Amino acid sequence: MVAELHADREGGPARAVARVTAWLLAVGDTADVESARYPAVVEGPAEPLPAVFADAGGYFDAISWRPQQSAGHSGAVSWFTPIAHIVDTDPTTALQRLAVVVDCANGVGAVLDPNQFVFMNTDTVVHLHRLPTGDDFALRARASVGPDGVGVTTAEVYDKAGFIGTSAQTLLVQRRARS
Image (cartoon, rainbow, N blue to C red):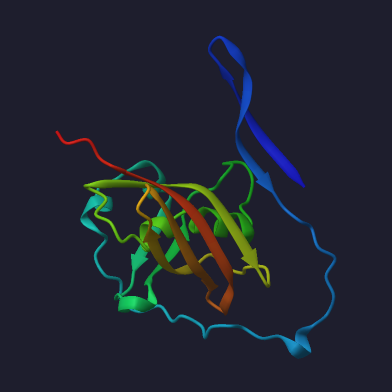
């Protein structure tokens, strides 16, 4: 399945500005051999939001973000609950809520100061071994930045029942203009 969003360009033809591709798989019963790569992540007390995100609006008004105590090199962990519907008149599915959350991986796993750098995700790939359930999702994310302005964030993705998959984002890394 493929869906594209097109936008008009001044003086030129419309072009694709976003694309979603998904494989719809025929499923079967493998409950007797189910396994998860990582143990479940248990939500603990929330840490303060990073200062740069604390007063940010827009996207951050649509989610509850609860950073957890950092675990060093194993990656930063945050729990999220989307609090806005994607379409006001339609219920939001668990898979749609998860998609909203996975977009945050580059912020959760940030290794650069967002006051000094922009590290925008240019794509997001999500691989799930089971469908998500519930409203709350956790990401354990790590970023790496290369010498040429490109980085990668990878994340383990969880719901309250445990590990459900992974995500990867390519990052465009640029220094912020000095004021």
